[in-house]
Amino acid sequence: MTLDKIRNIAFLSTYPPRGCGLATFTNDLVRELDKIENIPNPKVIAVSDNDYGYSKRVIMELRQHDRESYTKIAEEINNSDIGILVIEHEYGIFGGEFGEYILDLVDNIQIPFILTLHTVLPRPLEKQKKILQVLGEKSAKVVTMAKNTIPILEEVYGIDAAKIEVIHHGVPYKELESREELKKKFGLSNRSVISTFGLLSPERDWNMELKPSQKWLRSTRISFTLSSGRRILV
Image 1 (tube, rainbow, N blue to C red):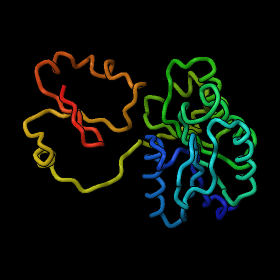
Image 2 (image 1 turned 180 degrees about the vertical axis):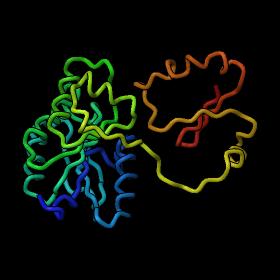
Image 3 (image 1 turned 90 degrees about the vertical axis):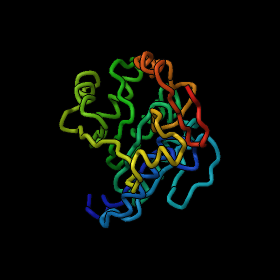
């Protein structure tokens, strides 16, 4: 494989305007890669659960719940000038039980792929384990975002240590005012603020998240500021 071909990179992921934390992550990532001269205009293969008005960066669209779409997209990739595919993996964004349809795609593509893991389960169900084992075995590299998941990937999933790379999640760089100035601007002076990135949903167990802090929570007023601008006072 030539260096010129490797430079043509595509990311398989959800993508805006689909509302998904992975979509936001991928959007931020490709915009930063635009600044690297040797990676001209990285492309996206969007995982869709509906009809979306994507930007021109999206060159293909994978229908999440349509199993035939996975082999069709694999064929399109093989017939394109894409040299390497980066699969942003989260069990819930691919079709089938625990996202098993993604295996149909990796079984049929003829180019190397990098697997980026956004969730590493220490105690997976048998099918979850098998899916990640197959993906790890067939990938050229496995990217994880935390060092403490390396032993899990090696011991639980049997992934070759030489394949594993740690790249921290990161956030887009932005010049910000000081914490106190920002608190003042949003009417939160002299108050404690808990913040989290990602999207809120019924599946996220906030009772479990806050349980270790119960004693502290009873002694102070906490503000949750949502991206919509609403505030929930606890």
